[in-house]
Image 1: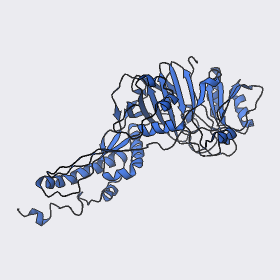
Image 2: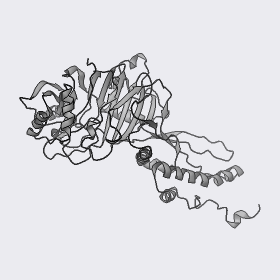
Image 3: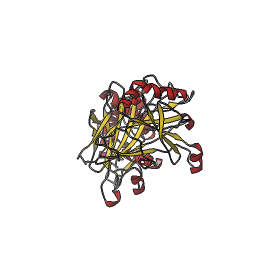
Image 4: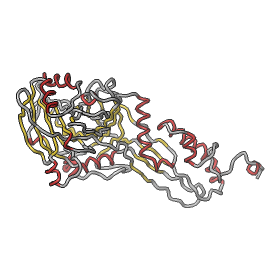
Length: 439
């Protein structure tokens, strides 16, 4: 296995759209357009062994793009494989911030059941994108050291003597490379790095029956538990986002070199949020990140993978966990999942993201809470007191929504169906004379 190597992706981008890739640039031929918004990776850490899985959601011609990864040695065929996208989708849904409901019970003394319901959200609806390139030819200062196939991916290992030669090789093969990539390439070449390239064999992809690019997975040994993020910011014109699903046998995973924080927990919001939860989660994260500042790594979920309370998605199967690099799950070893989410730019993330395992095993989750109101008869004294308490509660929920997600207070009140006193039309108003006469 590899010793002391730094897994650093370099994908060279050739379009004006903002790049948002944890591993760097994309290469594109001609005028190809890249739709790339956020990075999504799964990391399984066991001692010094790491399995890194990179998801893809590329929506374009896969012939136009390539993944280029600086590596310290020539990677063998056995260290690279294709992973199951369904396992990542399941992990995403299972760990997503969630919405729980605690309906109000009948306030009058009649038998009533109070249930707990839940609704899972998908705070991140785009995936890290991973493309292929056209031709692999070169000579002289740029040399092909190895070539092999991993299912529908053609893998090539290159070596170059200097950055100018590699840039010239790419441009000669019709790949638009940002000029700012030169110094970064030069730095890795001084370390004796090689370059791992992956492209899609469309014929093999069709023969295998796949229509989306499947995730690529790399296994390696290194004392450093890290993710490369700096290269992805070279040609970015705005902040980028990263979602990491970190699997560990020890406990919670956190950032070692950046500030660690958590999303707001147990926010009570108006009932209509159930129909707009995805937007709420996006706005909640954006507003929280704006307040905390860029460069903060937020924990959104931490839980043993074998359970959930409540469940926002199905539990992963043993086969799916093994596919993500978990080796001893069948023997009863506990696997903890930490979902991390960061928004950053060049100034806030001057270093690659270093991670560390902790001994913390206390489950935690980001969630929003709904308290659907009792809409039945409230004629008893307890029911009247309950109705009288609702305006203050509604106002507090609306203020929470405005503060946490930035939603307009007047629009929120309209969607709640209440007036400026936070009462519904059918509810008694304390200023009405028929309510003020002694009973």
